[in-house]
Image (tube, rainbow, N blue to C red; front, side, top):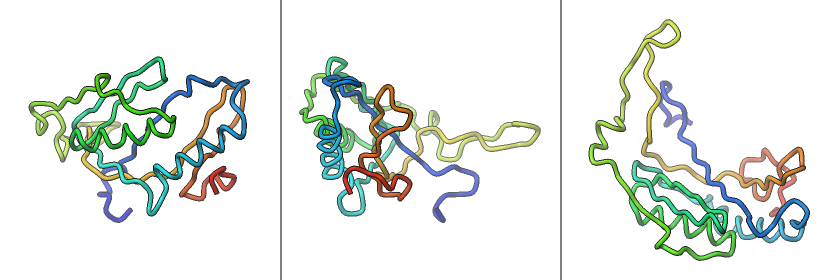
Length: 167
């Protein structure tokens, strides 16, 4: 954490999708185990998958299969790589006709590296960064099932979820 300026919060990222082929009464521990294995092989090997977040946006939408991804990435190629890995967890392959990539024409003005300051809560404070450029590393994957109070940890590299399935 020593590389994070004290004025800024560390950069985080989250990717989620729905498992449309299952509901709370059809998903089983065996299916969860398969998902955990696929997440581990796609995201947790070595030091963990590194997502190179940026200011471009790759959108992938296939609502029938449960995907409505909006990936902030440095370029189209890195966005495609992440979408490909996410869809592989669900045993799908991307249909790139359902994807689009966009960038702001004035990135520097829209997303300044050092944001301006404003009076907030009685003090002059720096505004939060918008779309910071950073590399974030995969930490954990959770399976949320309707009706269960707590999520099921599929994979965990942090130690927060000692009962992970993919251990």
